Image (cartoon, rainbow, N blue to C red):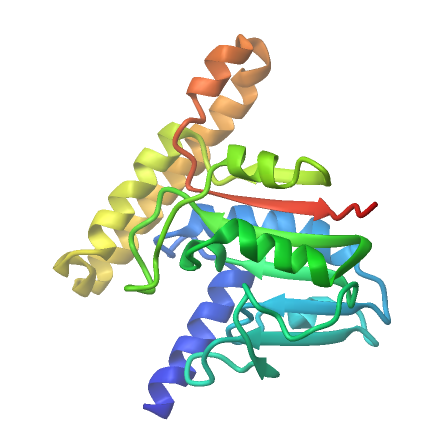
Amino acid sequence: MKKVVEDFRRKINRQRTAPSLLDYSYQTLRNNVKTFEEFAPMVTAGAMVLDAGCGFKPWERFFPEGTRYVGVDYSVEWSTPDGLASVDFLPFRDNTFDAIICSEVLEHTRYPENCINELKRVCKPGGIMYISTPFCFPEHGVPYDFQRLTQYFYKDVFKNDEIVAQREGSSTLGSAFTCFNFFVECTPLRMIWGFRQLFYLTMNLATVVSDAVIDFAAPKLMRSLRLYTHMLPLGYSLIVRVKKS
């Protein structure tokens, strides 16, 4: 069991921070990393950072020396937290943290708005948050997979804050290519190692190319037409600056 957990730790941490074209969810992971690369430099040495739902702490090494990094999760079997806690009830005082990470967690909570309010509670005024969630993605972490959140949820729940950056995981066409990866990953076809890797590589390259073409053409398109090219995102990642009166 220990080896299984260690293999999973290496795999999931590598996927989160250095996604490969051979990963079935490459485009989602790549989108999240791009946003995190904007977020990490905003955190200064000496800052207090909370990783809510930290898993095996893939993001910790990206912060400068002197950063006080605290990771919490609900399980010690499949994570390495500094303490056990649920995102909807954090054991910290108000205005404790300068920066907060909540990556691929909110879809596993029953009441995501309550969780975001709890994250905002422990965040200092003017503090920043990095959040990512999947949208077009297979069920995972079952039975604790409860919903998919849209950009309109985030715009509403952060309407009194500043959304510094927000990215969609892919265009609708790119998502369609990635869904073929999901089909393979969720069927016995995933056991055919060589086929699986070649298939993922092909679909991921098709996704990258199609998204590049759409991004190039988008400025020439009507705003409403561009909206239709992005109605099936793979997921969202964003940076939010928390404002408190």
